Length: 150
Image 1 (spheres, one colour):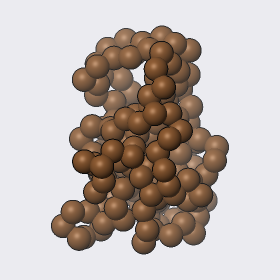
Image 2 (cartoon, one colour):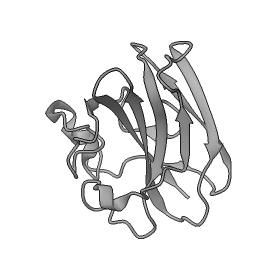
Image 3 (cartoon, rainbow, N blue to C red):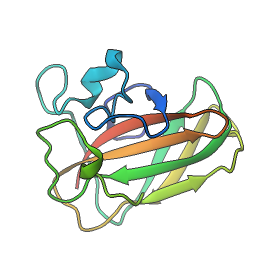
Image 4 (cartoon, rainbow, N blue to C red):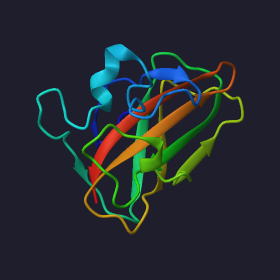
């Protein structure tokens, strides 16, 4: 996924659906991408963030290297008060996605697609948006984490 948000990854790691352990969400449990799940960038500095406003319309863009039959795309954000000093855990995320784009087994129509949705209101400070692309004909899902400041 790409967007104007600062990305932790130029491509989203994939994992078996629902199998990324807490602390490994942003790297999808793949050790060679482990730094993507760390609370700080490889330089030791904070991950760069993009300033966003709750309630604003925002467009997320995906650039694919392969197009798969797709169940859906879901976008989650961290809860107010989450602990940003440890690797991201499921308990840090709101359990309900703020945006769901169903595909019902269809393949995306091109190698670049966009989804526009409304960012949640009521948040302030640093948060992480976790985008999940769920593949329908395998047990895989692709994860992408973007750091934002509300």
